Length: 125
Image (cartoon, rainbow, N blue to C red):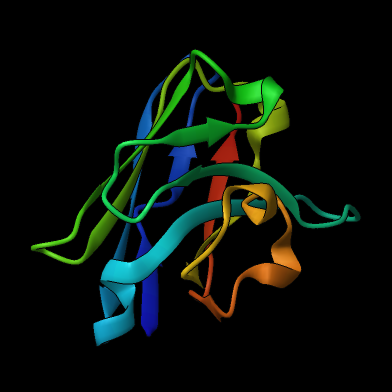
């Protein structure tokens, strides 16, 4: 699986942004898809994940109600719709794929075998 994330940019606090991740490879359809982020000086953290067929999702508490993850397996894309952005959301965002992933491992970065290159989200007025 190869992943390429894009869509980052500068947005004002309270604004919205949608990140996209284009995937290739046969295993993608059988992979849990996730988004992680890493702010300067901080460790990479889990943001959201979605199941193989897109029915189940999970979010870190700080983005619940503001972010929405979705996927389109036919188009091999993963989206992260981000609303009500806050300065603390500023980070490099990475999409990742966890082949045949189990629910218990969705939030653990080391379980994700494939990673995109990251896209920078800056939240500032």
